[in-house]
Every structure is written in C-alpha cells, then in structure tokens.
Length: 211
Image 1 (cartoon, rainbow, N blue to C red):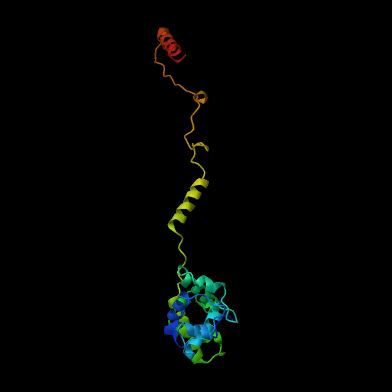
Image 2 (image 1 turned 90 degrees about the horizontal axis):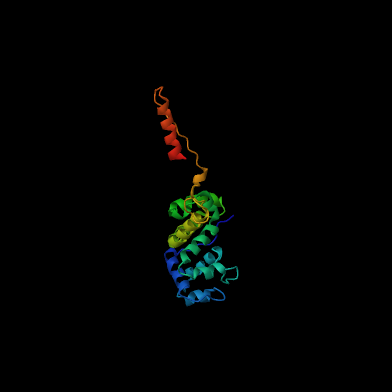
C-alpha cells in the first residue's frame, strides 16, 4: 500500500523545514543532530525525518538520496517535492488525480477509507493535515516548455512538411511549363455562304498566321 505512516503535528513549520534544507549543505546523514543544527530542536521536529524518508529524500539510514540533491536546485525544488508526494501518497492520487487540491477534511475522509481501520482516526487526521501542508508548499503544475523550444519544434515540422503542389522539391519554386507539350484546339465558325472565294480567303489567312 502506497500510503505513509509518518506525519507531523507542526504542519505550519513544513515550509521552514524545507527552506532550511535549501539553505544548508546536504549532510552525510540527516540525523536529529543535523536537524537541531538547522534550528529545530523540539522533539516534535524529529517527526520530520520520517516524512523525508517516506518522500524518498532519505534512505532508511537517513542518508540523502537523489531526490534530496535534486531538491536543492531552487528552480525545481517544489516540483521535486510534488513528485515525492505523488509517490508517498500514490493510493490517494489513484482515487483522485487532483488530491493535491483537497482540503484536510476531504483528505481525511479518503484516507480513512484507504487505511481500512489500520490506523486510529486521530493519526489519520494528522496524516491528512501533513499531506495538505506538504501539497500547499509543493508545485504540482505541469512543466511548461520554453517558447523557443516550441518554435524549434514548429520549424522542424515545417521542414518535414511536403512542398505545396506545383513547387519543386529542391528550391520550392514554381515549376515551369513546357510549352511544347501544349495542344491548341481552334474552332472556326464558317459563314453561311456559297462563295468559294470567301472560304479560300479564310483558310489562306489561317495558313499565313498560324503556320
């Protein structure tokens, strides 16, 4: 079951925890002592270490993992956190793809069903509060590609598009027509006359002008 066991009763301190991580070098081991060095010496602050483990920031021994180091890049830190939340609360997102927008009560009601009596309601309530606080700090928005990237894609598609009809493949210029391949059809309406001289004059004129 992809649901967490960890929670904090100091949900208001969650942004402070993460900001402190961003302002410090990654430790060899994220211990209680290291947390105290960040300025969080309360026994309630220790619960945050368990949260980091379930989010994939730390391994079971407290050593920072790849996600921890990725989080240190401020340009993507909140998206990295969102990724960890989706994994840690995968069952919740499975029943609601927009779970990150839930209120505490909504999250509590869904989690209560998902835990199926494995946890007390007071614990589930704290997990729901922790989930909402984490989601509020994280960034679940889809990644937007830079505009220049889109322009490059459009240019590539334009290159791959076939040239319009009547255009050369090499230089995209209009094809020239070979006049020698043209055929002319001339219809002559002869006058209603019995005078042979009139007909002779017409055909002579055609021969002179049309060759």
